[in-house]
Length: 377
Ligand code: ACO
Image (tube, rainbow, N blue to C red; front, side):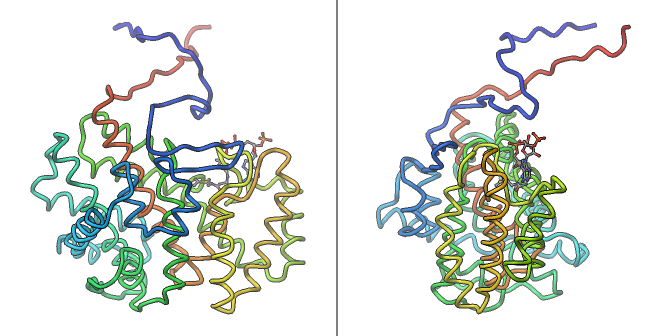
């Protein structure tokens, strides 16, 4: 039998790789005890309030905020890729309407890769050409997948609209108000990067093998879809929409706490304090829901959240970003099964930045395992 001798001795081992450092990065900094998150040295609150998603994406990918020339070139490139290959959109005709939109979106991106003549090119110069195309294509593909839920055909892009406004237009078939787009765009910004979380690590492992950036993004999508990760926003909203009045919300939280229920939208591997993304989105969400006559929903969410946090915060469990984004997506009219899509669209920017950063750094990522001998007595 061939022996396996790891190069380094095992330093730490924890189930779920908790506490293990998987790489070095200059992309984002997270403090899970103070509750801070910054991209390339910029606090996310200022980015969410003052910058467009295009600017934030450029920053994450390129390391600095764009000047006006860089921004218009990036914007023009994104707009030039807004029409994904026809065959990728037609793939929808072969998929059931009620399949989850994220699964349809993932399938369509795979089809787009098959129709793309340079998909197999993996030298760094080719990899660096890909992020804008992936970002623009996936927005159009995701919008088509959302419309397919209701049997509606895709809508062509509007070249006058920003990335966020156009995605909503292509998904919903109507142009939203500036304020509504801003709330949605802020949700994209705060979710655009988060270090080497599970989905980013999945993408990084794929790029480290010498695969193409599209395959890495597909791996990230699969990892993000799970209920413990990006899939939690749908589950949390399904719970919130049943709450009714704040009194009912509090009683429901008490009942579930007594059952030791695992609340979707609460808890985080890194944050053992309030999630900074929630506090940034709170005022925007409150105003958005008020504009849409849904203040009751906001109040019952707050009552529910406070009740859960007052019991679980001593253990470091607070509402995470997935608990609030569903309120935004519901208010602007996105269907619940599609809620993980905006999260995926945003955070793939971070995945791609980590993958590109890794191209110059790394060996193939391949950890070992602790063998448990159950054969010998
Ligand atoms: N509700 C109630 N209890 C919880 C929750 C929760 N949401 N999260 C963790 N706990 C408890 C666990 O039951 C466990 O208790 P125990 O020690 O008595 O068994 C303890 O906290 C530790 O739980 P772990 O799963 O080991 O903690 P971890 O740090 O790995 O959890 C995770 C992170 C997976 C996100 C977890 O908090 C969870 O399942 N949350 C719900 C799903 C969710 O919201 N996911 C989105 C996360 S944010 C994101 O991906 C963008």
